[in-house]
Length: 42
Image (tube, rainbow, N blue to C red):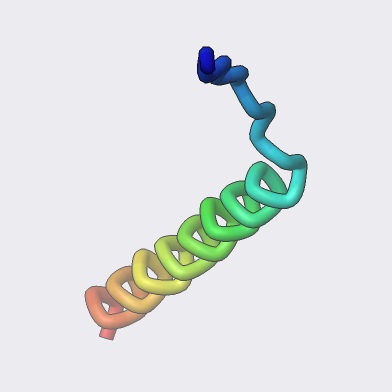
């Protein structure tokens, strides 16, 4: 018997989850940068 392996496309949910993580990381980074700027002004 021969075994045939086919490529399976990545579901759209994985791309949505990944883009959500990137967005959350960007928001967190912006908040951290904002905190550092306010500390320097004091």
